[in-house]
Amino acid sequence: MKNYRIAVLKGDGIGPEIVNEAMKVLDAVAAKCGFTVEYDEALLGGCAIDATGVPLPDETVAKCKAADSTLLGAVGGPKWDSMPGNLRPEKGLLGIRAALGLFANLRPARIFEPLRDASPLRPDIIGGSLDIMVVRELTGGIYFGERGRLEENGVQAAYDTEKYSVPEIQRIARIAFDLAMKRNKKVCSVDKANVLESSRLWRETVTEMAKEYPEVELSYMYVDNCAMQLVRNPAQFDVVLTSNIFGDILSDEASMISGSIGMLASASLGESGSGLYEPIHGSAPDIAGQNIANPLATILSVAMMLKYSLGESEASDMIEKAVAEVLNEVRTPDIYVEGFRKVSCSEMGDEVCSHL
Ligand code: IPM
Ligand code: MG
Image 1 (cartoon, rainbow, N blue to C red):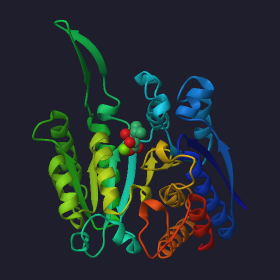
Image 2 (image 1 turned 90 degrees about the horizontal axis):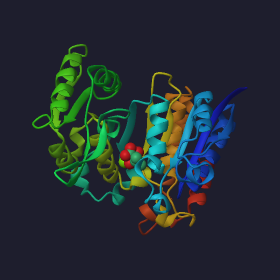
Image 3 (image 1 turned 90 degrees about the vertical axis):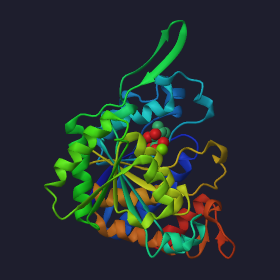
């Protein structure tokens, strides 16, 4: 029987609760599809700081590299907010993305039919169907550029740098174009080329690459306009290709279209294909430990792992179908509306398992 080794980084806040449900669902689908899963837990973020003094211990990187894929919950919390920048939990997350070379972040935002009522957008704005794939560059740009503090004429100042090289833009653009070919063949490249030089290089490079994909319709949008268009007419988008920081912001926005940030999964991929899978939401320290978080984004991240890294598409489809079904019956508080049964985080995991 096929056996997969999955590195598990539960992290902080609601991380452990949601990851436990995702593991429950992965075990259940494995049993149905005839494979087994072995977990190797490691520390990342605040819990790693508490235990080892650093947000990303070497052992964690080694475990992820040895695994077939990595599942991550969320990191961070008020407890570590006053730590210096290089010792914050978030630094661990950025560090693991860099250490594993995960330059491509896929964040699908789509509407599950039963959740239309949870979307803050009017039904006529959502339109017939909604399926946007945000392709976010993940290991470059201002997140990793030179930064620092200095004193100018006795005044404190600080700076961060947005820098992209042509190969960095090419490899993420290729992912976006290849994905578009399997979808509706549209790529919208989002930048701020009216102001930023790095955006102008981004646009030139994407334009060059488009020549290799004559079937794909390429458009460009400034990021401010894109933020507006996402709530004005989200159905116009298929693949949205963008930089690290713009992708961070736009994917949070896109998630709300689909009803709740608690629904959005993500895949972070590099050259190796093993990938790291995590919900796009944070560690939600305000609700941690209460068993009320929505585990569906993490469960859907497992579905993405099965599809993109483990080659188990049947198991992946089964999870997505089960999630769509349970939404007709039960809801966690973040997506609750009258007429449904309100369930806890762990009950939601059980419900998904029983619909597999
Ligand atoms: C995300 C998060 C992270 C990011 C934070 C926690 C560093 O917001 O995955 O979107 O900005 O990439
Ligand atoms: Mg974010």
